[in-house]
Image 1 (cartoon, one colour):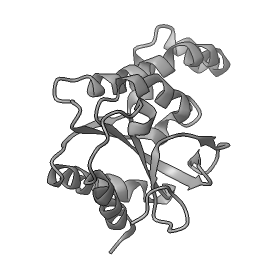
Image 2 (cartoon, helix red, strand yellow):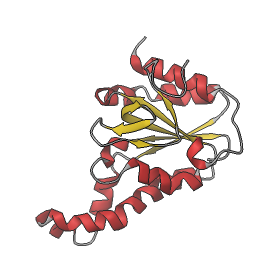
Image 3 (cartoon, rainbow, N blue to C red):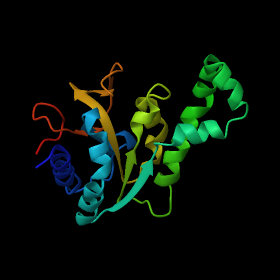
Image 4 (spheres, rainbow, N blue to C red):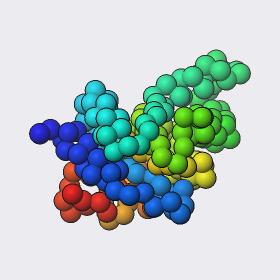
Length: 189
């Protein structure tokens, strides 16, 4: 059994447990943590997670952030001048991009198909690297999580700290980590 299959099994075992209703938004988040080299494999097998969710009686929706920066940049006024002077883009990133990404995730979290029994899978987190911290995004959306949100996280989890793409300093977050490592993660099968 491959790494993605094992992750999907661990995810299914966790998502099948009875859901506690009175959790804060941050506690309704699940991070499926995998090696960054497995990104394409995970994308090719993401149906395993959708199927596992359906088999446990929950709805499944997806939010793919892969193209979010390119789409935001294409819609930005003066984009050509930002390519000439990329340092000028920094302020716009701080002011607008985080909110744009959060709005994209909120669209799915608040869609008519999402409810207290739904799981929203968020893919493409790696494309935010260098633009938005995942911790800031999670803080922005946690009030909108009604069911569960599963963030597919290419990086590391160790000692309650997450590191995107193994590069940034980690941050501590209340999400439930699902990992392949027996000695890491809150949830082990």
